[in-house]
Amino acid sequence: MTLLAIKDLDIALGGRLVLEDIHLRVEPGEIVTIVGPNGSGKTTLLRSIIGSLRPSRGRIDKAPGLTIGYVPQRLHLDATLPMTVSRFMGLPRRRSARPVEQVLERAGAGGLGGRQMSALSGGQFQRVLLARALLESPDLLILDEATQGLDHRGSADFYRELEPLRRELGCGVLMVSHELHVVMRSSDRVVCLNRSICCEGTPERVTASPAYLAMFGMDARDAVALYRHEHDSRPVPLEMTS
Image (cartoon, rainbow, N blue to C red; front, side, top):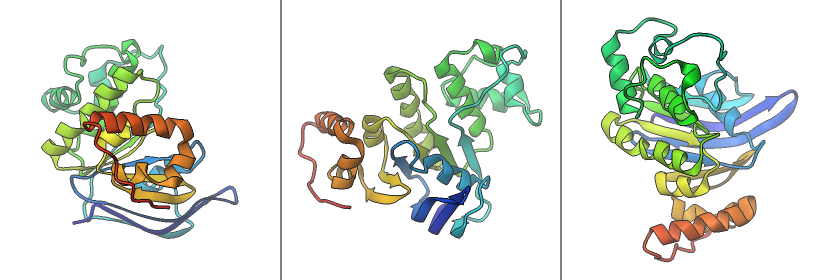
């Protein structure tokens, strides 16, 4: 059963059309990544999916009983507020210690339960947010630039966790990322968004698209070169989309 189906979606904010005519599907076990320039509507689209924004037009259909785990782009906590990781994981309702330990371990944050949230490194903090999103064993995991602020190695390590999580939970993953080389390596399907969807398909197909190359310029070319190198230097098919 399709987890998420978006049809004819428009969203206007402050009288300005931010998203226009969006069509998108996410299937079980699929990793879909949304890329686009700043201001292209990526976070707005995710916010509409989790229900914090109402569409101006169109439909967002979710599988019956769909459970969503959400990792936001930013989460600001008062550094002066004493709060351990275990206590944070128990908000807004208390949870028994064993399930919390299990999801922390699954997200690569094992052993951090007794640490203060304010004392975590950037990578540890993001893994704790991921663990919290996994508490309900979601059918769909949504990540909004979850590695923002991490260095290249930290980002790569974070995204490397997604594949075993997908296999273990059987969940779909919908994520926004600005790290193009990571997107290509980690995704089944890539969606290029700039108010509307400019191109969509497998990483091989999208990286050959004129729309993708025009959108990201030299960053796109560098990412394509790295992708080809990591795939034994085999040529990327030149099927074009726009």
